Image: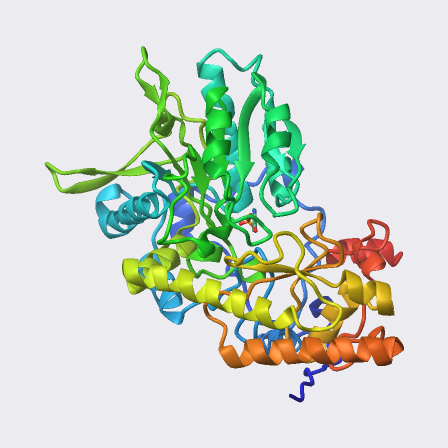
Length: 517
Ligand SMILES: *Cc1c(COP(=O)(O)O)cnc(C)c1O
């Protein structure tokens, strides 16, 4: 397949000389505004001394600028994005239609409840459906994404032990070595000490090792199941018992729900708290196309018998409730025992509406089909890549995968010097997005690959074919592999410079400072 990406010599928008042209005139506040808010009186001391240096270009220049940038870019609407753990599935346009309906986008969070009954009903149903899909009792739609959900879960865990008078003892959160980096980060942000447990060679958590770290100090355990290796944790029942025996809570990182949805549920596995990444499992865009949404669901287990406090009372934000007698939906919270608010208002409504639409469109049977197709795609790919020289599938080599598979290019690297990074660049060069590389940390030269259910058989075949070509080039002409990519709009970038605090320039202002302008 021939691939060549568009290449424009496009300056930054700040560098475009609009020659005095401007696209928009900000009006002076008119008489009506003046009368309502009594004029705009910004205190002198917080006023800018000079106007911000915004780009001065006309509308057509803005549109062309960004259109050209999109032509030099790549996304899930261009081709496969098998970025493992991220579940970069196609975002069905019907979700866009719903989320961007003016009847949603023109609502204001401070509007009277009576005027937003439709949206509240939608959110109420979504809470119910997510509870059902995860096997939990109560959900909040408040957190902004998965990592935010994790922090929520850890703060709930903290509050749980606090209300039980155990916070001075319960200091540790156990996390497996295959965990996503946000897990230990969230536990640590919530004030816990992180204890790592290793995975066995079969990819399951090493239960004997777990037994040695579980103690009275254990506040909880955070895991994702299936794991980031794409493997179902076979000892989950035993793990659940170990943690609950010391009154720890089990937190479920739901980023990999796409591998089990409709087949099993975190609630049935004994988890107490779970987050859901709407932008992964339920089809709303993420990455640059965000924002995401990270609802958190809990089992309504008892926290304090005497005071009648349950885990659901600890949830943050607002919960939509339904008053049957008056046929009215209303917002409740945050209540007395809630961990409070983690952001403004009710959650990221756009992605939530998108996720609602996705679930409504597919129904229960459809969601099961999603899982089946995603798992089939992964195992089809795994069966093919096993036969390509230089690649292997470590950890439980013979075990079937769920939503993703972590391929190792270790042998290729040792025999040819061509690394996982070079392989990734070789994929970009053929019009594919690369898999996640060098993660999870326990796999050397890792290529974490996830096609999801929305990728076509033809594309998976082409992808394998490209990996076969890459392997061939590596063994015959490794120098060539190190020059990739040459067909993309931007060639091989200096990864160190791009990430080093000394050279990284994420904003125009910082860029100017670093250039000494
Ligand atoms: C994506 C991901 C997260 C974090 O979720 P965000 O929505 O990106 O904040 C956590 N754990 C795993 C395994 C993930 O893949």
